[in-house]
Length: 327
Image (cartoon, rainbow, N blue to C red; front, side, top):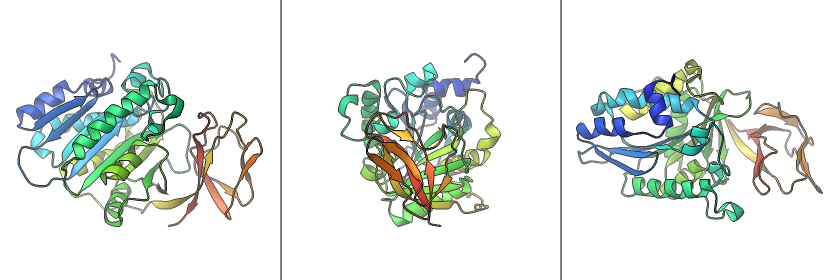
């Protein structure tokens, strides 16, 4: 961490002291409702867009931490440029410090009431703190609400950047979100009909936020990420927070719908393809996706593409998505 730039090091450590001081001196209402969470609200009245940006929900996904750190550092040096009410959440602080994906269990499966045997985990307690801070932030907020949960993918992908968008978002906010994702050069969007306990689905379902889990490139070491791969996202995020106009997307994202969820039912679960399989790999009708005891998952459409295949999840959790192109 010694060689990591100060702004990045501070955000990774969930240290908002310098950021809070600069905005406080500029007259903003600054709160830190829990470790790793800060809210910044302008003193002037009037309905402002409310934006929640989260990073580090998985502790080994460090690229978005670096991107957000530089965006926030630049904003803190000219606070008046912040055109929205902002909440920043650094998710799994302990996992970031340990350089691990999680401590006890996947934090991004904890945003639901049923946690079963995971109720006593460190991540369950952290999710509770994040849920409370999120509810407080959006309480009394205006109608325009955003949540960008920034991640990086474990495995390579046919689309280096893609996003998962809850399908329950109202049409107008969903269209605005998809437009922004295009401006951020996100290549593909998956419209997800049901929650897997993710943070972004929680904020969309319970607080009416135009929310998305945004996958940016690959997992990397803090301070060693190639930030050029995040340039479009950096510009789009800075533009959203500053209220500026953004250039039109050079290409509209390809849109996919979920065809089926692959749930790990037992320890006998086996994927029918190797661990080097890329996200959005296409499989033909009838192809075996996975076996799990007496259960066999097969492709049900002419073609389905596999996303997030992970046979190592706990029993009862989603081990992959199968999607079909819709636009």
